[in-house]
Every structure is written in C-alpha cells, then in structure tokens.
Image (cartoon, rainbow, N blue to C red; front, side, top):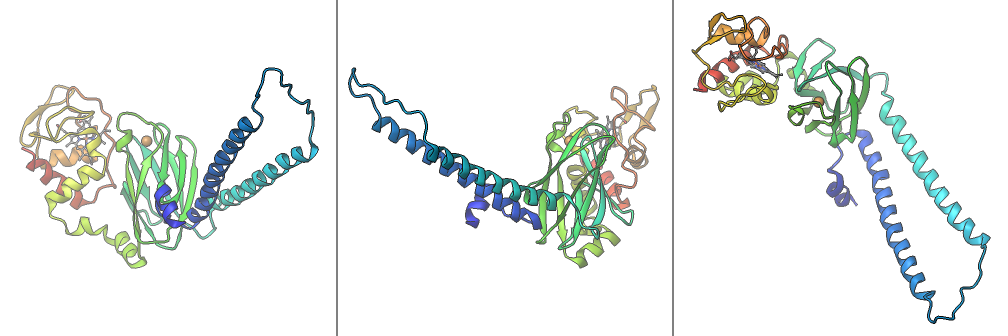
Length: 313
Ligand code: HEC
Ligand SMILES: [Cu+2]
C-alpha cells in the first residue's frame, strides 16, 4: 500500500502524517468502492426492470423496512468511524506536547522569518532537530498567508493580529518544501521556505555558526544564494527588468538619484545600508516597501550580496 500512498501524497516525514494518510486512503478507497458499487447497481436495475412493452404496469411498491435499515445503518457506521478516526487525528495534530520547542514564525510579503528560543533568526530556511517535537507560533505582519508543509501533511493560516499554532515531530533527516497557500499578492508563488531536519549535532552547529553554506561558500556564490533564498528575487531582478524594486544589473558604481533629489553612489556602504536600513535612502521612482533585513542576514551574507551585485555588470 505504501506505493499507493507515495503516489498520491509523497512519503510522510512527521509523526502524525502517517495516521492522516491512513484515513485519507481509507476515504479514497471507500469512495472508489461506492462509485463502482452504485454504478453497478444502477446498471443492473436499468436492465432488470426495463419496461419491455407498452402495456406493462409498474408494481406498486411502498416500503421495505429491511432494505431501509441496511442502507441507513451501514453508512451510519462508516460515517461514525470516519468521524472518530478524524477527530483523534485532529486532536493529536493540533495539541502540542508540553515539552515542544517553540519557534516563532512571521509571514510577510513575501518571505518567512523564523525566530528560535535562543534568539537566532533565520529567513526562509527553518532548521529543526530530528525526533523532537517542534511547535510553531505563527503570525503575519501584513496580510493573510498560509503555512503548508506537504511532507508533514500540515497547513495552517497565518494571520495578522492573531497567533496560530502548528506542531510536528520530524522523523527523518532531510529537506522539505514549504509553500504559502493563501494568495497574498504579486510575490505569492515565490513565498517558499524549506525545513531542514537536522541530526542533533548538525542542529547545534547551525545554532552556533549558521549553516554550512554561510560558513564555507565563496562570497559571490553565497550572495547569489541569499538573492534566491531570502526573498530579494521577489522584488529585484538581475536581468535589467524593473520589479517592485530596482534591478541589480549594472547598478554597481553608478550614481543614482534618491526620492528627495539627492545623488548618491552605489558602493559597499550604500548596499549595506540599503539592506539594513532600506528607508534611509529611497531610490527615486520606487515605493519604500523594502523590509529591513537587520538581524536576519549574517555579516558574511551581506558581504556575499555586495560581491554578487558587483558581479552583475
Ligand atoms: C518587498 C520587496 C523587496 C524585497 C523583498 C527586497 N527589496 Fe531591496 N528594494 C526594494 C525597493 C522598492 C527598493 C527601492 C526603494 C528603496 O530604496 O527603498 C529597494 C532597494 C534596494 C537596493 C538599492 C538599489 C538601488 O538601485 O539603489 C538594494 C541594494 C537592495 N534593495 C537590496 C536588497 C536585498 C539584498 C534584498 C534581499 C536580502 C532585498 N533588497 C529585498 C524592494 C525590496
Ligand atoms: Cu503569502
């Protein structure tokens, strides 16, 4: 049966996912069974009781208690089974154990921000230890988003002005895709995040030093990775086209004009300032909508971004 589940849903990667899959597959097969069974009955009846001549009269049948009991009680039992099965899964999926590690999730146009118990913050890449219950406390800064992890079979709306929760225990080390599933504007389909399920050792290293990419990659490649994974790409292009923000292509070393008419030079310090204090200088012709990345990018990632922009001539 696992091939059937994997075909329909992908393999489950968190504790209660398997239980949900059981119910899902049960309902799917039940539906298929009744589709065929009812179809066959209709087909049989249409042949068996077909009117064969013009003067044939239909017998006057009013009631059959035995039949009525059968088609009431069997579906009732099936529906009750689905209800209790689903209710049990629902409770275990939404009530987190007390010892769960808590991570605060903030959704905003168009990225996901994660804050760990020790104050570490991360963008779009969520690292969690394997086999440990993790509880996400989620809220949005602007509009409604929705946090969906197909491999965990979990999805929950993320709302401004209210907290929603989700919890899971990841069972296998690996990487899982997260989608935003509430249409939230132009960058909605780019609002992607990844959950990295780490071994306990990997997780310790991540909290201490950031992930391996940040520590070891050449600066320019790291900058490209930041560009793709940390939300810059939703607003800035690298091919010269205008997006929500100015393109990165060819801006290095140029003199640009700010909204207040002052001129400025695009150099290392300007790029750094744009990332940490985006509203300090607003480029002419653009809205001041860029969020600050203060505390969200490590020093090395900012350096990488500078090298990357330099390389886009
Ligand atoms: C929500 C959209 C948005 C996101 C996400 C975003 N920016 Fe911006 N960015 C803008 C806008 C709009 C401007 C122009 C207005 C301003 O200067 O604040 C801008 C300006 C800039 C500038 C100055 C460009 C110039 O031509 O002078 C740099 C550099 C920059 N952003 C870097 C980044 C980096 C690096 C990231 C990702 C870590 C990022 N931005 C993410 C919208 C965004
Ligand atoms: Cu969204």
